Image (cartoon, rainbow, N blue to C red; front, side, top):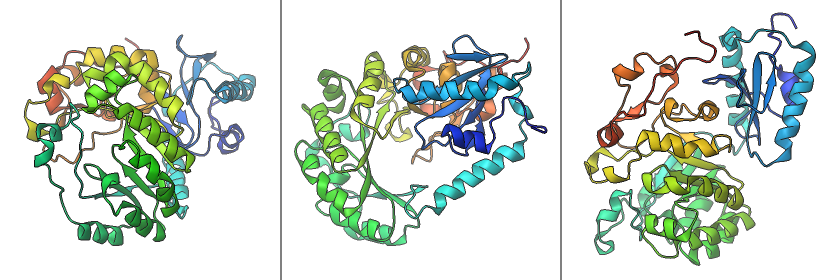
Length: 397
């Protein structure tokens, strides 16, 4: 084993477990496994809320908790680590160069795939949304006053200039009559093509087969409630959840991967656990919970839907092990079991939307360097109540 810690799983062992080569330092320990695999394995300091405890460490599997393959992965990991158990665990002893090297190798592997997803070129499709989502600035305009932004020529120039994957977006990209042709144009150039937008009842499902034939690989849309009452109210249109169900089913039947996203606004929190369960039922492409921050341009007009941090933490607790992706929430708001999936920075098109780390709280936080911080518009709306300074696992008081 040389200088390898007893709890370290080398390349061959990770391959045997089906994890792939990626390794990174998580907030609580070390996370092993490629994000595109069904499961990843986190090794942390011993904690009573982990499913497996082995001497000074604990093991968690990130993925679908109902899938028996996750339990098999845990058993296989114990079979490997049990015979060499020792009494130490310090994830920082893993050479930084080793982790960086393996992460770079994983990025290179993905980049080498001819149609791998990779970083996407985002292309706005000129279109008009017919919804009135309670968290979106478009809802403030009557439908009759809404107009598309940009031109068809802008879209075609962007497709021609794109170097990697392409994500078609806009107010309602799938509503544009030329979207199938643009998907085909992008796909013919060897691009991985995805579309994000709301479905329209009947229309989106009917177009799914031709979009798939044109080369659409991924469809992303919002899931705003587990019940029709909640989703349709937040979406601003009757029948909206029915349209999601119909479109998701049609896209999957056509071979298009589907990803659902849920903005973490206050109106969804009461149904968040049920939303997560519904997302797992509807799609195999993943479910992402998005930190919500009003754009700076809207002033305080959407402050009422910003979730207080304590309420967010309480709503996330029941789904801490559900395997969802969490985008840009302060690490201290996440339950401990979710922190390995956190850390993504707030990435918005609003250049004036900045984040901060309130010194009175974050100044003493040992995980600050890996934390997304709190958006200025969120701090204005709900304050900093609920932020807490964290200590690294195993740190002495």
